[in-house]
Length: 411
Ligand SMILES: Cc1cc2nc3c(=O)[nH]c(=O)nc-3n(C[C@H](O)[C@H](O)[C@H](O)COP(=O)(O)OP(=O)(O)OC[C@H]3O[C@@H](n4cnc5c(N)ncnc54)[C@H](O)[C@@H]3O)c2cc1C
Image (cartoon, rainbow, N blue to C red):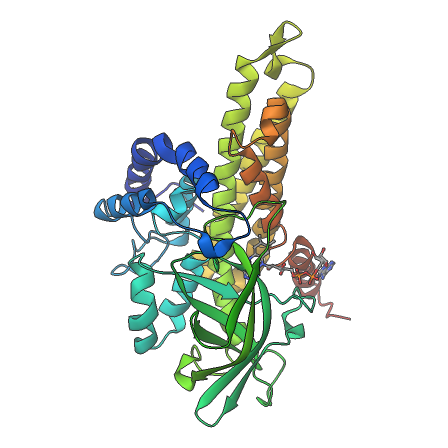
């Protein structure tokens, strides 16, 4: 194992750092304050994206800092998972940077799906504008009426009728669906008369957001925050008619594609969480050293230096585990790295949540205000402990593998 970044990765990292420092950091606080002032909470139909974002995206693209997540040499940066790790971490220090570099969730995962499994027509129609940053997308798997940790519970159906797909059902927590630029949804649904095993009965369907029968019913706040202008929405599908060519890779491939999508996606989330935790730690130290109580900087008061050391140890453990998972994905593939992928999916957001909580405490009242990104980092860590599979589901995966290694099958 060699965690030394390759020359290519180190060079990209240097440029990404400089870009964030020169172009993003100076405007980021104003950007989010502008979003809060211009957008109106739950009223997503009136949400708008500040022109400043398009300007920053154009600059990043011109600088060649674009689609860095995609391992394809021609369409992306051609970086391995391990090479992308420190870059994703760096972008995670900012809430805005992943979008500026066109490396944000859920678009990066959706682009990977289309890149890996899409037909030439699907790529031309949807992947190209996504890669260009012209449109955005959402991924719709979770349903309001069933426990979606177990995806076989899914009730939405994609029925084949002659030469059409008829899509019906409800989804929620579809991230990004409130963004005015979101044009395409990837929807996972049950294709009922597909008489194969439980993991070959579901399909991924491309659904243009303006297809008749698609209705966004509301945006869901996370601890009261709507995450404008992207949002997390509930969407209903009522007899939505689509051509058969809108199946991704054909009917019945849904689980296979979901696994392919969530593997790299989980690594990217973990890397960004570590970057956010580092940013929270920076804020904690600077605030703690500048503010004085009981005759000392707050950072030097009882217990706080110990907290600082705990934060450093937790972040470094999470980073090493994430780098190990990235290295293993590159060496043996995502399937053989399932333990490590599930492990970092649990560890990284928990570390982010813990470190952010410490940083909030050191900030006192300011910690829970919008004056710093700490509340947003806390929401990120807390939410990712549920999104893309709750902690418990990933621990169950790890336990199953450990039992199987020792000859114990599921009982
Ligand atoms: C901010 C945010 C963004 C999201 N974005 C998306 C998105 O873009 N697209 C999308 O499709 N979904 C998205 N989700 C949804 C997320 O993936 C689901 O909420 C998650 O998979 C859990 O499904 P559920 O909510 O139905 O919980 P349930 O299945 O009802 O589970 C509830 C709880 O049961 C417990 N549990 C479940 N399984 C086990 C087990 N094996 N052992 C022990 N306990 C268990 C866990 O504590 C779990 O949290 C998002 C969620 C959030 C919060």
